[in-house]
Image 1 (cartoon, rainbow, N blue to C red):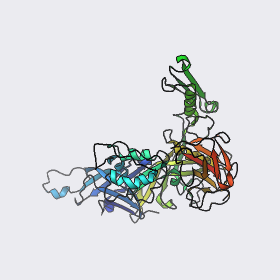
Image 2 (tube, rainbow, N blue to C red):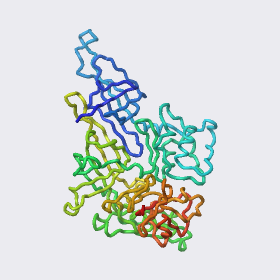
Image 3 (cartoon, rainbow, N blue to C red):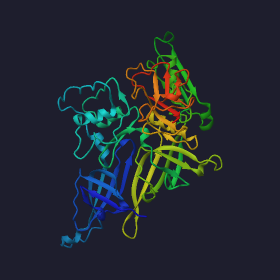
Image 4 (cartoon, rainbow, N blue to C red):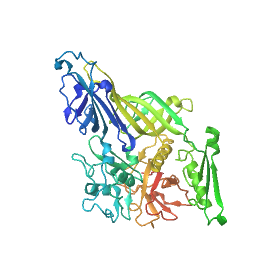
Length: 507
């Protein structure tokens, strides 16, 4: 089934003049500007294009893409006509090649500035405020927001982290992207959507509404073509050798630690990394921790499967799908997407191979037209996890993988209402509806920020992660009151620490 396409330049419909086979629109994860290419036929020289104007793509009534034209090229439509013919009307046919990027280019083209004083630091935001509040309240003061864009009141500017000691702005001249990266360090993802809205929200809120399967049900799982799943071991490090030391360590001696994962070595071979960090890692404990972080992804060295450590190959999935197969809203780069592949079953077809991967990039193209001239809309997606991804994304994917091991589990987060008994909660822990205020709080709640929370959890089901690192029960925390959703730290987390939990709820 073909789709109805609308391509507009500066508010003018140019769809009928577009050569669809030569048009493509790319979107990327992490608000990286994606490029578009549009080829326009101009048989009678009725079109005129200039750089800096807007171009949008709408598919079946849904706005999917918006951006700026950055390059305009005039092209000969055919071979040059007979130049001996003095009639200039014989050489009217031409083409226009429009190349540009999506709205996210604005994140690199808007700089932090204080019109009240361009020569001094921007005053610190004092008091306790969330990252979303800072965006909604002060971005219009310290950034030039283009007309028509909503960077402050979008419904998807959500709280991710609370700055209890205030927020210090970067220096004037810093790009908006760098400011958002700083605000999103503790788990916020951001991008500018096709409708000119700035989105800033927790990673668990950008789970895709549907996924892919080679046995699709056409509601929560759709089929695909040209699919392949790759494990890339190019970046695997399973044998870390770290040197450190200082004049204060063992009479000035060098300290050394080595961390080697025998399981990964047996599976993938021995891949070493050496780091010489004299004067920086000054103690034996520091080099021990560094070696464990490299290989295992945590200072404790006890968490292997799915960790951010370099012992595991990078997972990548590529596939193609079509607009008419999409059961609900279209995917967006950055959304964590479930993938179910029965053909890769490890137990003879009893259970499918399953994984959750973020959509890193997506390209929209138009492979053909139907008898009415409507275009088929094709999506090509690249899904994957890279070692350079932030720790909170790995933390969330680990939690997703753990939840998937339980068949038929209902999931819950801070936006859930009245979750049933046995629901798997994955999210942030809180105190009295907020984050730690002064670094002295030891008593925390599961889903304390929920509308009808806190919720109780089944004793023994709680897992606690501090800044993405799993913590050991009875050593770091204990389940002080599971029916009331309470657990207690032996030592209070520091200001700025992020506490995430997994728990099976009692409803």
